[in-house]
Image (cartoon, rainbow, N blue to C red; front, side, top):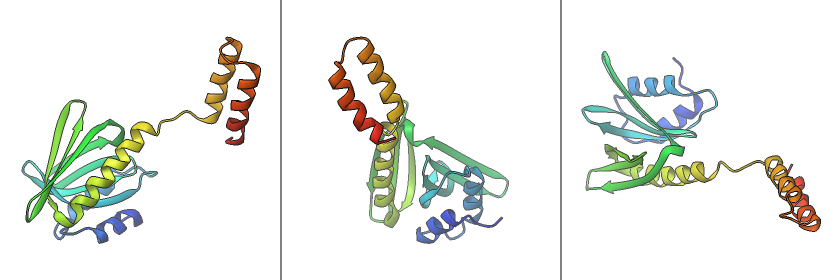
Length: 166
């Protein structure tokens, strides 16, 4: 299987992925066509050593060794907190999802800060980025006008801003 361009770019930028080609292939099989791999690093979860990747939609851990495989898939919109930790050799990443915590160990320390910060930023954007379209906002404004909550002048002022965004 040929490596996708986004996967290859993240793979080349990562540290410590030697010997994890099968895990990278497993990761690539999990990706949707509209999903982009932004960053990846070596990591472990339990007894599995594999690849931890931040994509445009989620955090994915994939590990493959001979006949065993493990995939952990966490949508960015479900991540409520991100904690990073580091010692002299390796780093860890703990994410909270729906009241549960999932910890990934042995991240390459050169990649850990980048992934932790990127994940925090993307999870926050994902949680707050589900904003209504200008068309939906216009419909709500019209309902407020019809209900008498807004005056005609207030409606027109706000509607003109939203119409310019269409």
